[in-house]
Image (cartoon, rainbow, N blue to C red; front, top):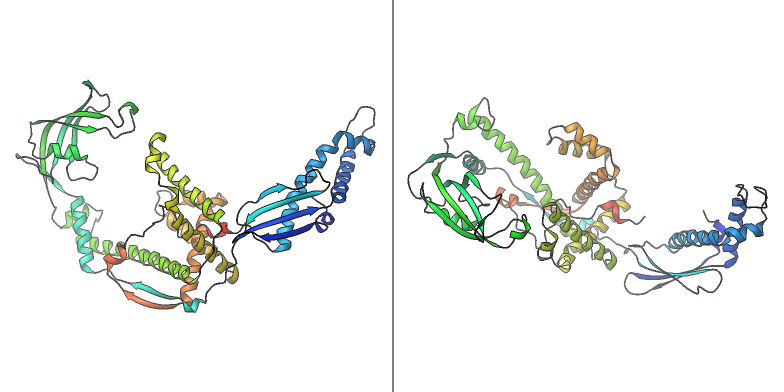
Length: 466
């Protein structure tokens, strides 16, 4: 720890370079450095350092300086640079947006003299919340909405029966398959009794085209570019697939009756209970969708009303984090390194979303600071329990969140953001906008949608520098 006198004697000058850029020069006189070195050497001597020819604890100062002076001075310079920088920031009321670039000045001269170059967080003057006009979406679950969900549930319980005719695109076909490359059979592709739903999204187009019109007993063959990453020597190569058709089946929708309800876990009450369960789930989903829509509208209103100058260093870091997240997704999906470049976006395309996330994060942080809004512990607990309720062992998930501060901080930030949104809604000019269930549940896509798992802003608490 550096003596306070050494820090109070330093000289600090600050220049504005461009926008939020700052160039801060810090100078500490040599006598303060020498004094700190002498003090530390004295403390070290009392630790009974062993030097040949001297009794422990009785080593003269000059001898201590000769043996340890260089190392101690370097330690003092390092400590002094860190602590003087933090003291200078506090003295000049500066909040850096990112780590500074530090360059020594006048290295040959005595004393400590360096220049720190960095960007600062912008000064935010928030527009009056009463001036924000926000439309609150209002919707309800209609019987027609429930009917449509029930119809989709029928499609999940299709009844299949064999037919003696050529396959159509709504059928499913049972086949044996073998794969060949340059005349040699490919190990791992051979399969027997595979059931192919021709209309399924995952069905390869070439396979679907080959099987439409096929009858039981037919043999088919088609070529395709091998899509899987393994084995690597086949990726991107043209392979031949031979098929033997065993069965063609068509589907029928099941009747809407008590048996249908039982297939979805309704033991008693039949369709009345199933419809009530479906409606309850839809109303819960609608409530969540309305809350998400309202949050987006609050965010949009705040961004429109508050023009925030953003540090370029923060924008760059946010783009880098976005690229790292996307790369992580691809790695977990098993995409090989040599294919990532073709899939990953140009970093410049992430800039608009990065700027949006940073701007709203700074605005949220300022609102929380000015109005002393903190994450409510009971709401954090409720949120954790809600998430945990979707798992087989809820208590294990609760313990998992509360066992690590960083993990729990994600939930605290999520809760804090919602508290800030609620606080704004209480003060803003709110109108109601009646919308249909479908409009709420299927909003128009955003130009630059956030990644899966991301919220509208960077974690609010992370925006203040340490």
